[in-house]
Length: 318
Image (cartoon, helix red, strand yellow):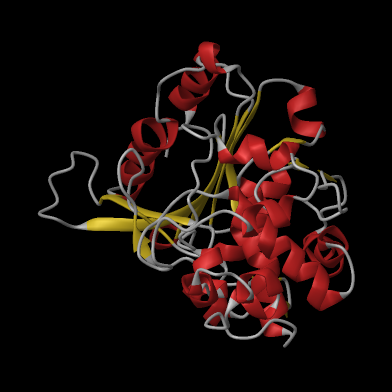
């Protein structure tokens, strides 16, 4: 597979980094400069997928109950609400962003910025009215991700970051990271992590390997599989579906798109501004993309689907 042309393409749009591994081996590695390689940078909502992994680890260790458990078991405000539908919200509804809260992340009422300006982020989320019955509609909501981080703190007795160091970052050899916290000291569940591209690739490889790393099983294969299944289909402008804080989609199985309906499934972590971790199990491939351009300077190319997927499929055909 020839990646020479890709080097020129990613340089032309000034990506911060582009990494591709296949069968566990790096086959393409691009950094705009040494700083892009060496310094942790914002991964924004890719943080959600890290929190999903930690939640699965907590379930494996018996610290977190089955996802059908009502969220009210951890948040008495939900139990005390006059809206009985809040008592129907489960842990899985939080993981799949289907809790039903009246929430617009950035548009309209701009719920996310209002949350970050509030004195107590989790309480802000809990106090929002419901606009939908839990489990019926996907609504992007970093507030429920903050609830998940708060649950991790409660059940483990340590911070979310410390739990990650012990059971995820440590085993993966991830040492250089930064993680923001809310006013109560709870690490941000929906964004706020800074990591190196190579460490994002390790995280993607862990999921490609169904939770196995070296000689250990960091996350059970059952929960890895469950977390990257489509739980709900998303509406435009989103594409595909959503699992447990992972996006799920597919692309045509040939580079000309004429495969009689055949397709390859993939799942990915996605962060604002061009942060991605793509995992394509059928091709044993992990792709990491990072960017740092301001919105008005950002390119319009879907680098993964327009540039990288054709190369991957060309390699399959050889």
